[in-house]
Image (cartoon, rainbow, N blue to C red; front, top):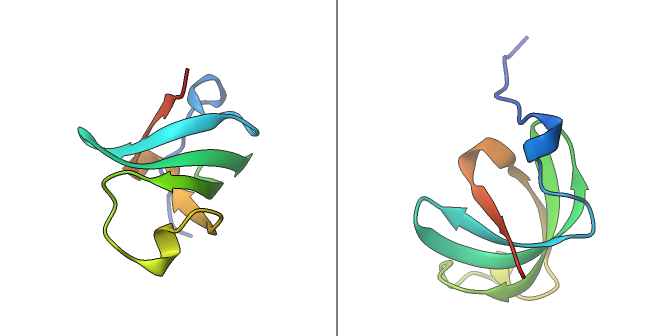
Length: 76
């Protein structure tokens, strides 16, 4: 069985919230959180910020990400 890094419940992005998904200091996408567990989150792209040009990152696209690889900053 593979160990996974887990995010404490209080630190997870909240379902229904809108967040800037960042890698390090680089804001990649504005996303809506569709589901969030201890390891993975399902996100919907609201808009591409500095993510590479790729059909995966077009507004409306949905995919899962490993939460420990990104920082999620709430959109105010």
